[in-house]
Length: 406
Image 1: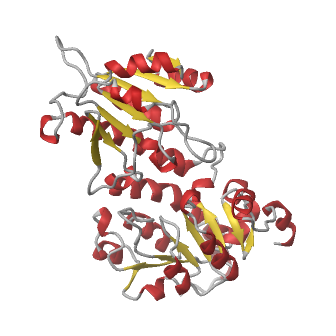
Image 2: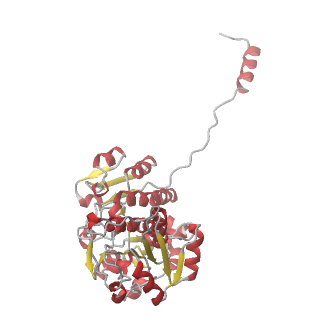
């Protein structure tokens, strides 16, 4: 043992000069989220709000996730995958609906609302066209904070869920059309696209929004000849710029459109209305003049459709024939590719939920994030959506007026 004070002093001085581990402060988490994911019971809804990878990320960040058994089977995710990701598998639906945050794809049914305990946060699609007044009133009575994910904006002011589902619907609609053209789907046996020496398939896309853009991209990628119609020149110009290639574009003039439809093998209806019904731009007479065996895919059918001959179909019986033209009018095309759609939703909402936890909960995120705030249509039982208030004759108050009291 060294007892000499001079030697000890020197050793201490030398030790103080050695590199040491830096002790950095770790930011404390403001709030741990308690999230419940129920199984979707809406007709032919096969998507799930969060995939196992997203659940794993949330659990690793200190959040708790409960998921109803078999919630992911429509998108080919097993209970075992969710369990291994850290989720708690629930066999009683009421247990999931008792969580602080209910996260689902379709709006809640009356039965699901009865299971909710109150003073919770609901994040789901709004689906204004099928939203009954009684659902809104029950949400208000239970003091629920309801957030429509289709109205949430990102940092650039874009609706990320609407855009992503539009990308999926546009690409998938072209794949569906290709399948329906084949001879094993009662089609004419035409390949969607083009090869050397054979005239390419003629595709008409009505609408130059996200759905129209991605339908056009898919058709061009397969080698088809594409014509795009829209009633907005700015949208057509943006489409040309985004594609990076020249395609035939035209404003919606009935005579020009009718002429193009006569030669078309595939027509994609991708018009959207800001509110209310989609404008019906293709008359029955125009459909009657089309080639026998051609295909119509009406992606706008959830807003009424843009073809006069359209009527809603489903994934079990997706098509019908009228005037020799095959019609595909399924409203929820994204459920056809439910696994891809579920990953897309998780990619959008994982960062939002993590941000919510960092802010200390839903209330603080609403207060601090303008984009997230735009999705709120009921705040603690108070209706904040002007559109819903006017449609259903209910009293409403702007969310901005409620901010100071949060």
